Length: 441
Image (tube, rainbow, N blue to C red):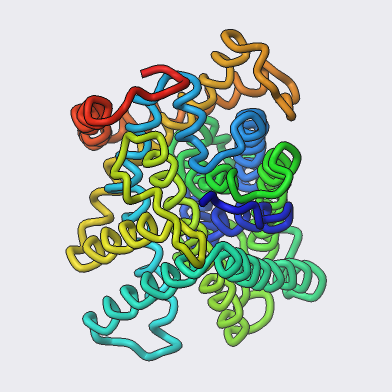
């Protein structure tokens, strides 16, 4: 049995959009308004973040077209450096990044549902988070069609509300374009743009490579896989910029600064407080979309590793009826549930923030390495602006990772140790199984 190609271009694109657009776009802007008290910089940093992300998508698009298989970064790192590099990525994803993300997103969803469901009992809140994990795992267990239908529904629902919010706010809302006026006394915060503010931006844009993880299930992958990355990141970049234009149209930066939920504050200023409930619905749909995408994409990394005989063999098992890597899905479900019950996921995720950036940097470098070492490999899509575009992407992420390391050196080092702790297990699997064909070890 093999994974079936059932996702079309729109499914893959919505997977990218849904994996990126979450609660971050509603919470990050309040922080940025305090860091960048300058209208042009406040909007400009979102455009700059979109540009860096699009450069990343252009870089990944070539690799995705070359290796349209389950696993995404796992396949790219394996091709560029050897199976050990792909394994370390999968190792830290299996134990921390994927289950930690699912746990965090599920509890974030509960926090937005609390006012609607009138929840005040911590045990009930935790129970609802666990129910959320089981529900979305069950959807993806049942088949890729169930997973993609849910993804399309939640992502499109959130997008429709947000587009209506932007259009309605800018056309009929009670805002002012005077909020965009630059006062001569305002200092130009160049240092902050490439410091904490840019770190926040990059993580609000994170998750843009989601469709690459389902390369084995996308139709006409040589065309649709690269295109989904480019279309998805372009849509998110435009959406994020317009949302922040709407925020600034509604409220001056001094009032936006420190807003926990800029979306609700903006809706109340543009229309009335009752409309802010609609923004809450958009956030809920967006978080649901992110949970679904994380479960769908994460399980394919472990499936790919198992196929290469460098992870537990049962993880490559496909359900006889639903044709999904159901045991990989169940494994990450169990780990997510454990993390919710223990409440340790936030600390664990903080350890791997630095690693997540390093993975993107090394993947970008793998693009350059493969161009030089294996020029004859079939490349259905070739990165526009090569080599400038991938180099700019790598440099931007290097700068941000350096800022994070300088800010939290001990946390970053713990993340590195957690990642390389997988090496003994990698060598164990290598010795326990037949030699791996293709690639390096």
